[in-house]
Length: 219
Length: 219
DNA sequence: AAATGTATGTTGAAATTTCAACAGATGGAG
DNA sequence: CTCCATCTGTTGAAATTTCAACATACATTT
Picture 1 (cartoon, rainbow over the protein chains, first blue to last red):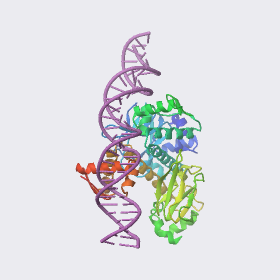
Picture 2 (picture 1 turned 90 degrees about the vertical axis):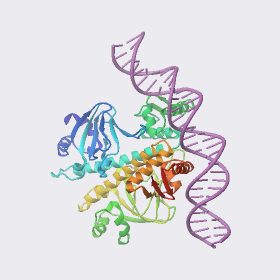
Picture 3 (picture 1 turned 45 degrees about the vertical axis):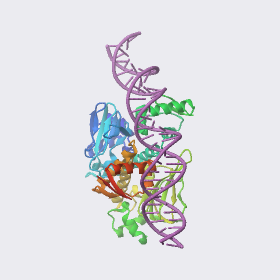
Picture 4 (picture 1 turned 90 degrees about the horizontal axis):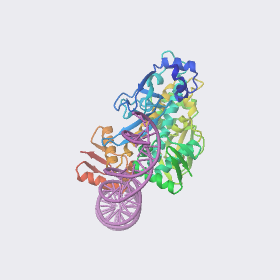
């Protein structure tokens, strides 16, 4: 487990926990690590929802696909970030989404009950990790809320601008890089890729934004 | 505090806690109750986000003002329901929304740190209330997730059918009543009311659904 | 440098949604 | 019962989005 320390230190689930205690704790939590190839399914819809996942390397996407094959990206999870914790903490039986490795990835899994229930060793860091988990779940809540704020706008332009302005605020700068390609951004905003490209072009010509690949600037 | 027992018993934050313990606990948590007149601001944007609010009587609205100055109502909170818990649990410094009393209301406030950190008395119910709070936050998370699943569909018809099928599943029956009028349903689905009415009419004529006022049947 | 595959921008026609306006239905209040 | 306010359904025109198709740009491999 030691080779993952750098990533795990950054994981909010382990905030305030020292390295030596972290290693011990991972054993106590029965953490295990799996490896996935690009585009491999990490968790398929319908599987038990009892695990919390931590991305150690790579990227995974939380996706929903309807019967026409339209993909909606609910979130992209990067190294040191968590997924699946809401379903586990709410006591949901089966997970209602697909989790897919967007590139070659390593994922750590922890059975959520090991966190929410005191371990038999009464491990002294349990209080901290429960508090951390609460914070993670609440933060994700705010992210969902933000996605709804964005996608509830009625036009492609308003969705895009709402997204970009929130990113600028989050980054504390008018120049920033986004974690999506055009198709990914279109899926996140829930609009057509071509329509999005057209709107980006229009905003550029109007001098409202500037962009090159994943870099955007709001003027 | 005794006069609020009926409402508090229904609040999921206190699930599994007996009346006598609840009274004691409220003291331990330093719960305080404030009174608000109709249209009075309960919490203004920018104030510290450290409190969890519980509506004891009346109704409060969570409102948001976007970049362009448009005000939108995010949610209405009714007696025994919570608000502010996501911001408090996520450790957000300043609350990014306005909370306004929609009518004369009584609100109980609890400093969230009193919940998430063990009290000095090591009150024996702390574990239960932390677990409850986690479940509340995680469940709200799933509600948002479901709304995203519905509104990410691209057409009014698909949104409506996705919503109705989820309701049918939730109610365990093809006949059920929904908690919205047409305008409310349109707002939830993020579509035009007139377009929604038209689509409902079409689905009726096609024999896919049946409905009268708030009652729907999926055939 | 050429070849290949993928991502992005562009376009016009088709489909859908929004908008405004109105008519019928419904439910209270007097 | 009548009046009034609100909710719901309907309609057609305007605006927008989707869709399919293709051109260009870019990156990687050979």
